[in-house]
Length: 209
Ligand code: Z5A
Image (cartoon, rainbow, N blue to C red; front, side, top):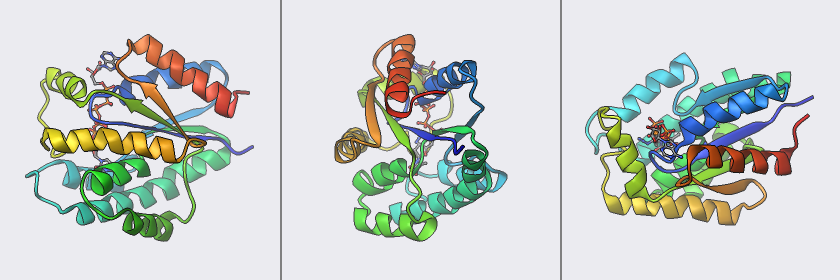
């Protein structure tokens, strides 16, 4: 039986990585084989592209160059990891996917959505997640969480507050436009409540064996 493909999306520090860890444990306890992965990344080639995308000056790449690099990494990731796992019957949990390109390079970065849709179709045809959890958070709270870790800021974290406000709205707009695929989760709640909410959505939308 075909597995399921679930993506987690949202702004910086929303809690996607924390949530994925909790989901993986819970779904494995239900007897599923779970593949946890991330974008950009998930294969050696895509991790090499990740390094190009996240480091360097804020203006290093234009949004359209970024989109092309994200899709080069994404095709490698889908072909080598995501699609084979789903075909084996595994469930794939992926930290970010195509909605991040639509939000970061598209709505917040200024690249026309129609061009991104053409790029998606060219690269992956109609391949989309079975379910997308959009973890919503006030960008100020999310960025404070990431700064508290004391790690070096990425090119995307360094973009200004107007960019991060647009980004939040972009993810909410994607959820409103595709309610069958997407669900919004309150990332400002305590981590256990975020996990419970996400498991509730997964059970309602996809069921578990
Ligand atoms: N990008 C793009 O532009 N276009 C694309 O197509 C794709 C990506 C695929 C990837 O960076 C960057 O690439 C990303 C967008 C861009 N922008 N940036 N930067 P990344 O993968 O390194 O960054 P991220 O996805 O934003 O991850 P993050 O900053 O680590 O955030 P997170 O995974 O959502 O959060 P977290 O690590 O789970 O939690 C952050 C901190 O908050 C941590 O200390 C937790 O312990 C804490 N936390 C988590 N949940 C809670 C709750 N519920 N309450 C309190 N504290 C919490």
